[in-house]
Image (cartoon, rainbow, N blue to C red; front, side):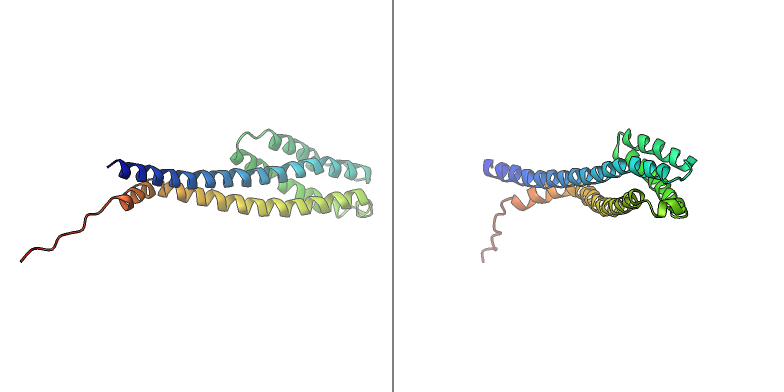
Length: 168
């Protein structure tokens, strides 16, 4: 009977370890996304600076971009950060689209470099978000299966006694 309890405890520990591994994978994916966001936040001042230096008028979109960057940095949860970053990305696309219409910016190497780096960072963020969503889905599935896996593991460990055939 003690052996059965030990085996059940080991099965529970194995299931729990699998869950911990998935939580850690989700946290790692979240850190990669956050790093992408920080990189983008660091590039925004360069974009704003070069837009002004290129003779482009400081538009309300650029001002909104700076405010959205600050709001995104202050987001406390991943869900809030994703919402703020979505708005920030839309503003970035609008600034870049407007900047491409301005002749002075087309020749400004700083602006072109900032635009290229932002586009690269956006691709990295998109890939990281896909990985994050996959990790989140795996964890959600694992959490739903967790109780069943515990009981299934315990059921597998039960010692089964062979049935005796009836004696003639």
